[in-house]
Amino acid sequence: MTRYLLSVYQPSTGERPPPERLARIDADLAEIHADLQAKGSWVFAGGLAGPSTATVVRAEDHEVLLTDGPFLEGKEHLGGLAIVEAEDLDEALGWARRFAEATTLPIEVQPFL
Amino acid sequence: MTIAQVFREEHGRAVAVLVRAFGDIDLAEECVQEAFATAVARWPVDGVPPAPAGWIITTARNKALDRLRRESVRDDRQAEALRLAESHSGRDPVPEEGPVLDDRLRLIFTCCHPALAPSARVALTLRLLGGLTTAEIARAFLVPEATMAQRLVRAKGKIKAARIPYRVPHDADLPERLRGVLAVVYLVFNEGYTASGGDSLVRDDLCHEAIRLGRLLVELMPDEPEAVGLLALMLLAAARREARTDGDGRLVPLPSQDRARWDAGLVAEGRDLVRACLRRGRPGPYQIQAAIQAVHTDEPTDWAQVVALYDQLLALAPTPVAALNRAVAVAEVEGPAAALALVEPLPLERLHVYHAVRADLLRRLGRFTEAADAYAAAVACTSNAAEVAFLEARRADVTAVGRRASSRP
Image (tube, rainbow over all chains, first blue to last red; front, side, top):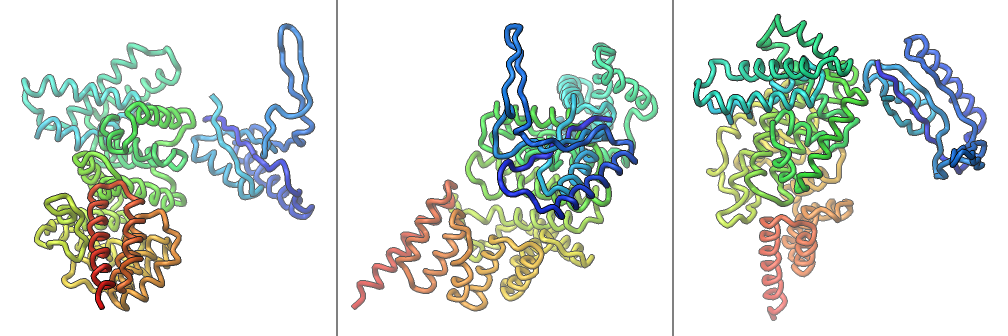
């Protein structure tokens, strides 16, 4: 079995979807999470608060430097992630497809070492 | 049978069997390579063994086992591969025909996995199944050898790290994945057939390799009519390959081709395959394109039938290139004016064939100045010497005719 990181990328600007649409997405995601657990593929999944809530920590010469905001500023940011356990890439891509359909956002699939 | 023939025929099979046994593409490739090197040294002295393919596979497998034992237990995965391989090896030193076929099919699906870049899929397929060297593939696709080598290393690295599976996809995914495999084979064929440049011998090799892969797919998946359709399409196109250029390497369009120079054997085989796959009643884009090619081998061509087939093709796979080809057939049925009206709006300004078709229709309508401009636009879109020569000659013709027409009182 291999672990895969599924990253959800979402646009940093533009309007938030209306509440009823968000509720629908949440319901779909809950269903995928339940299926992951039922199949024994679940490791972790969750959504992230926006990039403005991020803090970057750097260790330099025994000193710790903190900066407010995300490490990378971009048109998209990491909106959430899932870590799944899968037999092979095809199985991981199958989960990614479900996340992509539920969120209508691109999902990046990457194996852990 | 020479070593070179065995190499071409059996390389893919040997690599596929070893990938299954050891789960490692690099190891499989290297040991098959070493086995052929041993054959080059031994066969001229000892004679060619009665079962050359089995000899290569057994030799390669023993080399892999030796290597794993030497390096063993350095890494868990290798130890695991060794255990797996040793538990198999006593049982079937030369595997049976059935599973061997499956191995090659598995390898094709791995090489053509959609998580790999299209260029990497083509390169891997040619390297692992066709046994072409990295240098040969690089030459065929006009990229530096180092670039191609890097592309292959990166693709193999991804297969290993991301665990791209080594198996035939599940039924639910099979139609889509098969389309991907057929697309790779057709791309190899087209690169060889309508050369965008490069060495003509390498080009021939690509066509032969694509047809060989096409035959393999039909052999492995006899119930997939699109695989049969693709093979038929390639055979019918290859049959006309000799007649496509004249003695000076200039392009000869289909209606002016000398049919005696067509390969009658390939035409007959292609036509039989078209009939066989269409009988199944599950038409697809490759089958329809093959049927169109088959109609072109009739004398004379039934253009109304060609238009009807393009209508079917466009219903399944609406592409502007198919619409352009349909317009060419419409010109023969309804005349050049009707065809030109269909061609003009197509978004194909970057394709030389689009301009060449427009030019020909304008010429037939007596609009010579516009035709000359369109030929010039076509020349600007291609770097293929045979095509440039053909288009320049046509442009000179319409310019001369136009001048005569306008100087008439």
